[in-house]
Length: 243
Image 1 (tube, rainbow, N blue to C red):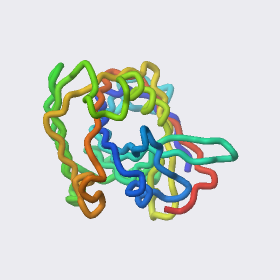
Image 2: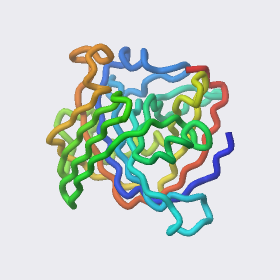
Image 3: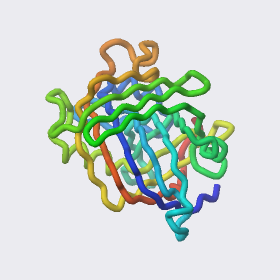
Image 4: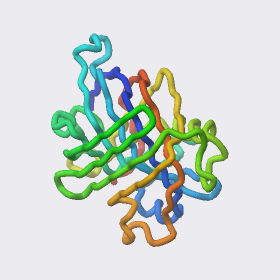
């Protein structure tokens, strides 16, 4: 699939992260992916991202599009041509943009489902709720800008957490019609994160006890990005097996 490089601004991005039993995550991953571990724990989470001025590279910013989007992600690693690679596997994407849904898996890597977003955002306080049309995704995240990570986080500090997610810049998702995986790579020109103290978090994905038995999945931390100039590129998917 041809995908032209895109430019834009990450107006706001919240990364809500869970520490998960690796065996539980492994059951959700297609080959050749395996969970990337931190202190023996797998890392998965929700990305709540508002994109602005998104347009094909070379066009002026004023023609760009704006959209609210959500992705459920699992940090993964794998071997490719003898080298260890890392990124994220994204089993579910939701978007408030019907254009994103229409193009997802066709002209844009990764299937997307339509959802309604409620966003209340201030300088220090954020609230985002997501409910998909097919009732498969329900997310509520509310928090305040903070100075440090929770004491029980598997990451030693904000710098370590920031580096972990920056290195996982390639995301793979199921493609249109199933059976294949499509990849997209994020390049951030001014990567910077700050921690969030979470007041409430709800997730139909991570709160599902059939998928994540009691004790196998606990909240770890949340991070916030704002005003990040970035570009998206198609990522090659050689030797990746069917979903």
